[in-house]
Length: 266
Image (cartoon, rainbow, N blue to C red):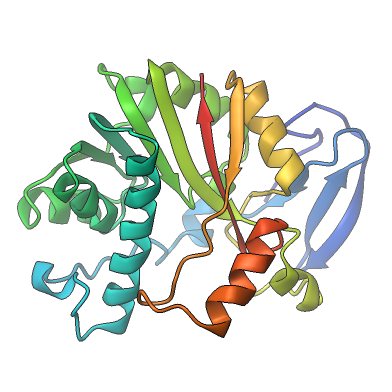
């Protein structure tokens, strides 16, 4: 087990424990309020099985899918694409942590020229062979091209030093490019009411960094992004609006929803 002795954001050694489970401590920096995992388990053990791959049939990724999970993912990705289109973004798009390739499919159908990168060899093989899309296991800093849009869906929280990774991403954006992504929200109603239980929900064991609205903005600005906005994206469930949607919309407006969706530009 590796121990972090300084805050990844500001390098301060002043911190206090806010959660302890199974010998691992989640701490909050007393100087900058960044929340991070102090005691890091062996990643070869921790991530065993995390990147297990099953793939999916393309025809099941649609609004009419009989697979409820794929149907929900399709609706979520359509709403993400709609946000991009409303802001007139198009062109080349890099999806970091592309996973199953679902978002890449939606982006391609919307007219983007898509590329994906992921640590999972099985995921990249599936995307290349079955979806016929451009994907690789390359690290973002090793890519030669730059992009108009870079997406980061639930990836940033896995990094030990998210600011360092964001700086690498910033270098791969075109001058007028945009970073569009999402992270779990430490300040969400759901997590606060859970008693801050470690297991399950939006904060599983393998997360390294835990963001509030303010520390997310601070991290993006520290990485070189001058225009940072939290996007109101409550997500309709399978395209239907109702009480569930209205509650999520209210939580989202006050940054109390389960996730923080952000957009950052140079």
